[in-house]
Length: 482
Image 1 (cartoon, rainbow, N blue to C red):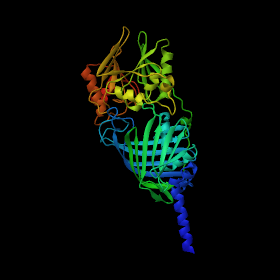
Image 2 (image 1 turned 45 degrees about the vertical axis):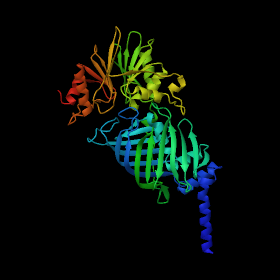
Image 3 (image 1 turned 135 degrees about the vertical axis):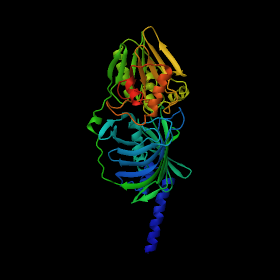
Image 4 (image 1 turned 60 degrees about the vertical axis):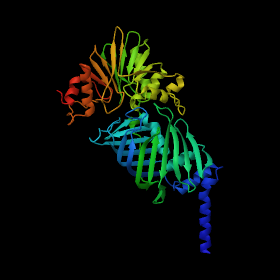
């Protein structure tokens, strides 16, 4: 009798799991069965640890090529599903010399990242200090709700549809204004992969594929032993999971400084008709000509760049913004180009990046329409192949390549010869005052000095697009040329 009962229970369980693939008319039934199969029904919080490799999204050396490869010796996520919160800590080192990102140059150190999100707020912890990161909000919400258990929970509340394909239950849904996702669920009720699309300030609606494999039971909760993710067609993660903890006690409140964050632009006039627009992590420079203005750098995302454009109009009313110069194609520095195009400005980019930009800007941000999408404009791009001078009777701005840099191909800087001002991004970010120079000198800093000397420029001051205004002598001291 006991044996027959066990057989009957096993048969019922098998039918229940099989229902994930066969009962496709009821999405909620499919999702509930998957939730039970993965142990998610009682899962409120989760922590997992991993290690592996990856790529730095948006920081390719050559436009359109794979993201720079990195090593990830430690990686951990803490997830609170009930409060829509997540923390991700990782240690990263470069696995190839070329490309962008905030990591130290190859072989010179590691980067420690602590990235947080809760509800509608995203921030980074830099030591003990929180720094608002609104540009990262979409990506972090996406990452939270495309985890194996998260995608099931998100599908349950977002009117998912379901169909059968090759023995899999294919569940599709959208989180309005944030992302679209399609989860492929096996007959065993386990999520095999998630194909998703998330808005991006540069590339528009951008595809992501996340593959989950090697599923194991971790103390009553099933979780994959391997996670492989591509974003924008190139690898960003290949992680081996080493530890999973179900329902840890978590407390991830939004810091007050993050909750009250608003974009601000601090304008400092550095010469007649020239303003340094700071106030955030990424700066811009506004240059006034006789009958128009030029903006050097429109960074990050609509929120930042709309504030910068508004300040430019306030400072120079009545003159149209004709040009926006882009230092290089990395996403943090290109994230406001669509915004500038929505205002009718011509985008001045490297010729190497121009075809890639044209393709990227042709992709709409339809999930959450951005300023460009709402304007209906088609961007106008001007490609520079090495050098270009913009000049009238009142002003001259020379735009030149920074040659030989490991940071980016088509890397550009601007020179205002009458004012002896140099504008650059990422080739040199000044440290805090009185910081001791690095030993040995940073190769990007040395490369910048070499390019300045090659061109015969004699700057008085540097207007860096990160950090603070410094005399050129400070850079020379920094690289041992004093």
